[in-house]
Image 1 (cartoon, rainbow, N blue to C red):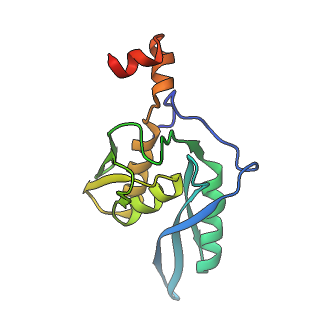
Image 2: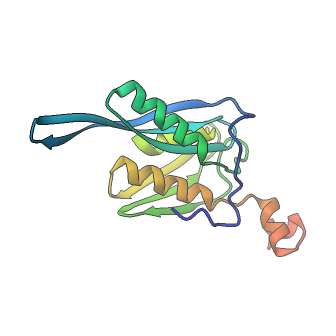
Length: 174
């Protein structure tokens, strides 16, 4: 996923308290001459439920250490998402590999209308009301990355006003 986007604000993990959500865990097998070797891969999403989110992948022989590695990995690539009044600033498409996601702001009281892997990401960001649709691949790896891609393209009105060099009211009325 391309994080060179000017909008993406990196965040250091040391200052914030995080909640982690396990998105999916897979048992993978390597067949060797001596038999089968099992190991686990875990996708984890971490967030402070206030606009900061990151995801990570951990692989290990045991489930617990795979999850722990995933959490460490997730804390290394955090970024900030503009959350306005518990929802998103605008509609946005996101894409990664075969997964396409569509996020749409929703009225208060709607709740998080999103499927498995997307739900974990959106709840970690701290979005309370959102409509989301996942199209294409339902592979949790791709869906998480596509959702992160969509969120990384989000702009709040203030940023748009500054980028265009216009007044905040012009953004809404223009």
